Image (cartoon, rainbow, N blue to C red; front, side):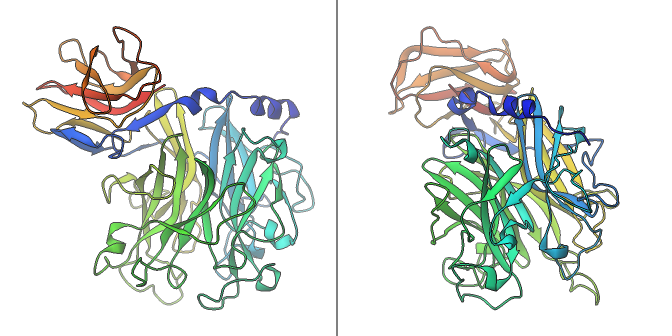
Length: 506
């Protein structure tokens, strides 16, 4: 391990995020922003796994991640450094169904390329008689609030005027009932542990302090928080519940679904929760047997839209044999979600797998877990994920990498090959427009038209795209009208092989 330096932290904090904040992305699979289509079809893609997976493995005996290194966590790229927050476990087996001492340490790693990772010697937390480890420090009272047990989500919030709050996180702590200040609801059965939704803040992402002296859900029901993001005027904490703590809109029982809390200031959180997502089979009548969604969604906030991966849980086909884990035989792949309002999520194509679990005998062959771990690097989108051994043996519970074409989760192409096609976007204001496109050429160009909000062409505002790339700027005869709402029509000629993945607005 190497010791992280103060200089590096200053460099990471002195970043300019304005360019990304100003970009709006209209993804091909966003049927709110690209609702109007003629003779087009949506094709979703499956990510390619890195041949060197897993890219981050559990540590040697005596290390905080010896039991496993699992991306119940986050990856951000800041400057030239990829930063990863993940959960370790310091024993190679789970006792009584949970991590020993109800603690999976918040661990930290760095990389220059997102593939080769180092675990810095942070020197913050004593473990096994010394401080030479990569455990982040979490301080708070009561002490049980500081003991991360499950899913960890880290948010960088550079616009916060308080430097000590520019990193925020949320995680699950399984607290003793008598240490939950503020009490709890009597909804659901009594348990020997309670799922507490805990938040913390940090100036650097390494030294954390819990917010307040009680969980967000004190006075309410247990909650397995798995996501944290800011969208519009609110911070949102999303996660999973199941009956009896959650139910379908008509009050009938439901398996694991996704719910959301919200806060305007990261201090005061709603007691009311929003029903954010359940897989279509969960809401069918009757429900599809064994279909659930696992641990909410791993979120990628693109400013105007949220993209995410969710766990496509399927129960075991048979009851686990005697002596096996309760979830023996459960299988989980990762599917695609999108939200335009920060609250309600949907699958563009229900059941599509973005990252599938591995084939039999591969390191990730049982079930996989999503993180908040997306980075656009060059012409690729990088996505990190974990393996979960639902059989309880905790084998190969490490962290892998998968990639797509940059923002290439899916594309729009013509449905009937010898007919033209087109789409029209929702209204927007912008100074520049670019397309993520494959198959455009001088022989078969895409033609672009600017429209007013009533679908009327704006005279003299047409452009042609004659080349392919992940961000091809449209060249217009004159500047786009300033301060005026516009819409974009993209025309595919008959016979065009073009695939449009996204529209970028600046």
